[in-house]
Structures are given as structure tokens and as C-alpha cells.
Image (cartoon, rainbow, N blue to C red; front, side):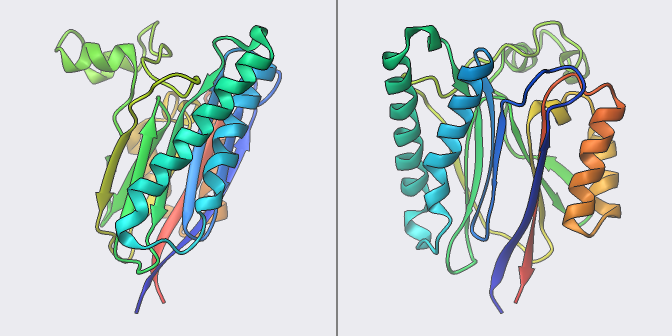
Length: 241
């Protein structure tokens, strides 16, 4: 029995924004979410460049090459964004978050890459855990004990990221984990995590075994909460086959 990744993702521009700067990838080995910033055209471009740079990793990759493969893909995406800014100086400041999960061909290891404030959550045996750490100003305040996590969720500067893919040197977080059969992962943009509480995310991930229905319900909840931002959700299950 080998663990396989089965995923479904969807995105919505929300109820306020005129366009959607989020991008996603939902594959058999790889899932990823990117949330663009820096104006409509540039934000769209940055997130799509990040996803198109990492999408070729949706192949059977040896366990000992996972992190290196993610690093190379992110470097390629960074170079593409840097070149795009050189070609059009009006794109200066454009960038994107990126959160990606890659399963080894053996099914025995997962690698996670993260930069920005999109998130990866692991739902295992009924418990939801946020695996990524936000690269944001308010997270720094939480780490310093200046504010509580609850206060961070409504802080006026919660959208200020301290790190993103913007064509410059960046230090993404990388981690490897042992997957379990039955694990469910949620990768999402802050358009979901900023407006839907963790307890509600937990309920939906538990109550909707169908990945498509689960992702749709999460999007609907964000829209019902006002949909102030683009919202993207990828639901990925580890299944034994």
C-alpha cells in the first residue's frame, strides 16, 4: 500500500475585488497556492509566474530530492519576477506569496515550502494544526508577545507581509514530514484564513469528505463573511492505494 495525493482546488475573486490575483495548482504529487500583490496586472502576473515555475514538480520525485526541487523552482520563479520588473518598471513592488506541498514518489515523505501569508493546515485525526508560520508584521508582534493571536486576526496591519517572492533574495521556510493515511491538508490564501475561524475550518474539513464539496463550502463561508479578498482553497487527501 502506497500513499497517494488526491486534491481539488478552487478560487473566487470575492465580493469586493475587481479581479483575482490568486493562483493555485492541484495535482497528483504537488499542490500550491499563490496570492499576488502589487496592483492588478502585476499581482496576477507574479502569482501565475510562481505557480507556473513550480508546476513542473508535479512528477514522481525521489524523497531525497524534494526540498532541492522546491528550492530550484522558487529560484526560477524569483528570477522570472525579477525579469518582469526589469521589462516594465511600473511592475516594481509586485510579488506573491507561495505555499506548496510536494509528495515523494515513495509516498513516505512530504516537503513543504512557504513564503508570505498564505497557509498550510494539517487536519489529522480530527485535529487541525497550522503548519506554516505567517511572514507578516503582526506575526512578529505575536512572537514578541505584544499582541495575542486573536488580536492579530483583526489588527489593521495584518495584511503587511515581511517576505514574499518579489524578484529579490528571499528565505522561504522548508520542512519535511512523514504523511499518514487519512491526513487532509488545506492550503489557502488569506482571503479564507482571515475571515473564517480555525474552529469552522476544522468542522468543514471533518464534515465534507468529498474534496470538491469541501473546497466549495470553504469558499462559500468566506463569501458569506463578506468576501473582502480573493479566496483560494486547495483540499488534498493522503489515501492508501
